[in-house]
Image 1 (cartoon, rainbow, N blue to C red):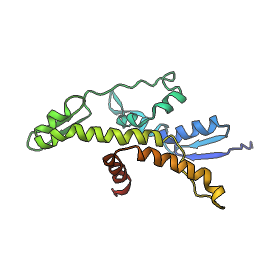
Image 2: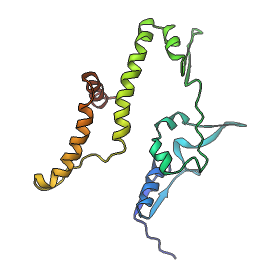
Image 3: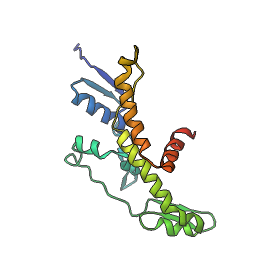
Image 4: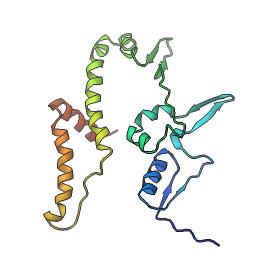
Length: 187
């Protein structure tokens, strides 16, 4: 019987587990990934949903995959090709109407249901992009940790927190409110 040494065991070979395993292995750790399904990849798996038709079951989530992760893992060399959809959502209603969301058409489609909301959509999208830009940066940084000891022991973590706070302070009042709402409101 062979003994294998591992530093980290990751339960779940979904896309998040695989990305974690990549970075841990790149840092020199021995990583074991365990997956209950016959295939790894999680939301990034392409599956046959009807005979002859294949699609990533959660392909919309590729927009959440940070470009730095794509570059670090050299995913293009391994076959990643992002195909942007012309239509992001199609919502049919019982009365025969429908809502078709996608690049360049969402505002017009929304106007079929509410002209007021359609007029406000560009401002909503602008505000969302402002806080999304901050979050895209934050997600690549380790959050501050609570540490034992006096203020000297805590200083590096306080500085890390201050750096994040400085970014938030750089937002206008509405942007800070939007960011706080994102974190403070429960689902």
